Image (cartoon, rainbow, N blue to C red; front, side, top):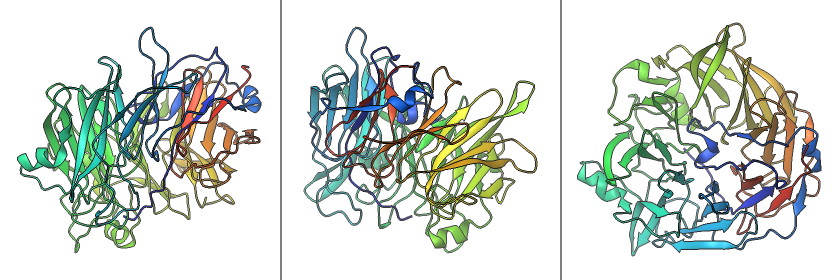
Length: 491
């Protein structure tokens, strides 16, 4: 797997004061990584009124790859939680942009890494928040002399202080379990996840694929801050590097893996994996899927794991749903597999070519009682012209289980989200034109028609893979060392 990391910081898009507050506690706003938000008042018509707020400009230190989070303590003002590559974590007043507190963690990596293209390299993956305890969990790459360590921290959201007993040194914890783990080679680009009271952190490699590394999932007990389980690809490589990283449904956890380095024996690469709490390895073909050409994908560095595995419950009629999981690969294919029986190597799957480019940005899901649709940035759409947003419509069976619903052009490499006013009405796909026109774009999620053109929203420092959040009447996304804000007239 070869993936390019590029520096970023924080951007915010601000709505009117009457918009409903909504905490954003994890990547793409849900355990299932759906990227869906309810924003009362943000109608299709109101979208056209978006304008930049000139006096919202917090000053932060460090490039930002992680998605900002939003936290509103009981009786307090909403706060934007931002983590940087300098291993600094900020709480920012979400209305004024003033820094409420900031915490400098252990020093990030600045020299001597065997590969990678981030410098300094500290916090890559999106943290996660436990609202019950007011605790922020994150992973940070740290350096002391010539030694590197991935460290999992817990911070109090009251003041940014490190919670007693933390951080957990991942090298040390895995070594104690008899597992080799090289923090200098392992990257942590994916969002952390709280699921069933446990904390999950996933790891891949770095730009340049310096080995040894393995796709790795760890489970930590947040109370005892101890290692509860670990899962790794059997072959070297197989990195878990999608922005969402790990997703959950009501029963299980799902990850996608990338290319492995093997002479021909399957070792968990190029796969969708279903994991259970405790992370015990399953030998059942019901618990993993890999395409029959997995070895060819390995050789071509065309990871099936271009995006996180998305649990989707497809409409079958009469109020029933069919549990599936969707992955979008660097090979340009969409893979749709039944969640209850993934099928093993070469198992039954719907595979449709939807891109002539490498899909590497997180999708977003729009689900109603009649349809399930997935929006994503497509660098080379099949059946459409140019680079832009593609919307897929998913059905559980038939002649076209994966159908291209629409395409819309925009310039950039951002990851989309979808807003509605009530969960269904006024669906809008929002995406930043990161490393393109650097403007905000909005599209009718049903038709692809432009509802906001981006006029007057040009920003600097947006980097590819960045995504928006919506909370407390505002949107936020990564840029360089600041936060941009936008307002709208409520519809």
